[in-house]
Length: 238
Figure 1: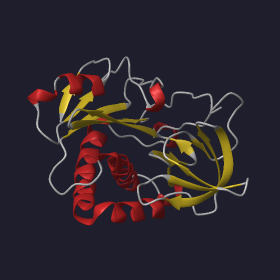
Figure 2: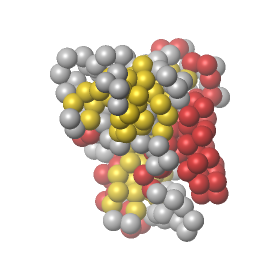
Figure 3: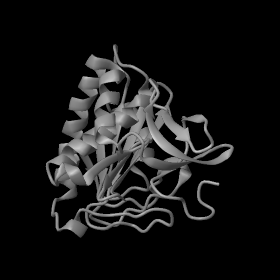
């Protein structure tokens, strides 16, 4: 684990310096000033929170690299399971970890040629406010853990989950994700190119796409977009 005092973005730094490192290298920043999340959103990182990125060079026998978002979400869940009652944790498509139904972390997977950079942010000491969903930090629950400690646990958990994915394929990863996700039939709202759709969670397609039994009577298969567990605020996901 390489620790940097300050960077604009750990993902950008690792991508720019990838030639120096091999598969599995992780970088953590004490302070990140220009982090970003999915769909080009800014990712705020108060000092004391975790911002880390890992370099992934696909190995023989591994499947579709896009599936690594699910691998990372499971690794985060594994680490959190050592800190809180798992009944308080839930995975939300595509790669959010919820604690008490509030967003705890963010995962961003970016491809650069034949390699990938996996960025992970975790609210350890503070939870930045978001306009469209509740957020939470570990400190909100009285959990005290250093970002460096959490980062090492997460790197180890990701290595174990990646090995499971390599050996068992996405079917095993998908099954483990579903066990930890919102139950089948949970009401969800999703955004896609043609607009919002409301329905009930119907699982994942074999490739990891979200299946939603829409209130309009159609089955919607969503490959990219936002998902809410309650109606999104006006202007969000439109």
